[in-house]
Length: 241
Length: 241
Image 1 (cartoon, rainbow over the protein chains, first blue to last red):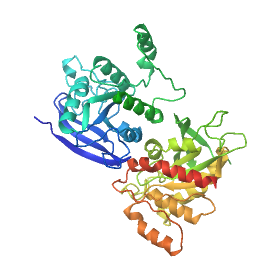
Image 2: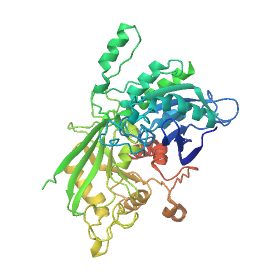
Image 3: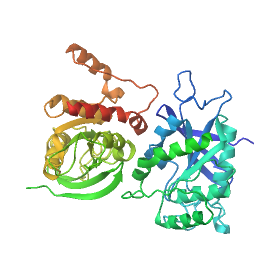
Image 4: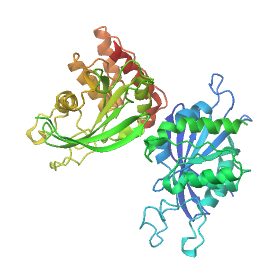
């Protein structure tokens, strides 16, 4: 059964398109939105020779972006400016929502860091929160959905990244699925993400880690926008390996 | 009398700062917010040798950005990505609101293109709309306010630009004040802005005009973000003349 996707928005940006889709998610039991930024497609004069998008045998690589608490699928697309580098690197960006919505579970919206807008990219264990299966949504349902609907995207060559709750999510998803994702999660750090603990763990197992601390920046999209080019470029390089 | 400004927000971006200020505007008779993006200040290793910001005898040039209908002082700062190029060019960005707010004039919010969020950068003629004096606010009050409060900004070397209602505003303000603004207004075009009429008028008086039409782009900030670097660079060059 092919899952029905409805295009609900399209805006040209840096030669490509921000497209927004709506679909019913069997994993989460509700309607969900997500965005794809498609970099410019192939043409004889295209600036992106390494990857050709479209139905011509070649496919484009994919970067999943996991957003932070309170975000929807829109914040990253509207505020990060990541499309510039994604256009240049011929990388498709996938930005999904941060939790199921519209289920009216009692207490789901009582706190900004629990329930709606706060899926933490995990599968909940309690019956009451059975719809909160964002891990399965991101790792299983969404890649399948993209594979079915967008043959021009190479979902087998994917990278994953995120900010705050999404940075933590990207890191844990990557570490649990080393076969699925080629790049590694960006370390947009937060006190609650305990970078020192991570650094310590990496040191114990001799895993390479480049930990960048950027003084003076806050936790906002202004911070993301400032450094996003480095991150997109990093993932694009990793996907070429 | 020095006008009291209150800083109500500050976020680091591309080495500089987005700062938000609140003040009472005598011109508009209400409290107003505006943003300044300050590019990185001087240091021995700074990448911006042409202009040194700070209290050391040198000053930074200024670009006023006039936003479109329904916008506040936030949209351009949050979504345009203009700070990257402004940081590189050492250009300060000034983004103001689009109308007086909070006056509760009967009917002020009945329509998206009249009243609140729709000041059109004009001085209203009718008594009922006496607070709608955005022309005076942008051309007179705001530059004075900046001069008083930010000696590091060279308000005598200013350029002006905008999008949609703001593109029209920038163009008309520039044409009425050729001595005040060094650059020219960007032509972010809109059917209502009638670019063909403008082209015709320029041709009549032999005024040079480079009219760029970008196919496929809509009227959104995705369009602005795609082309803003060219515009910032254009204004920076004009300010160096």
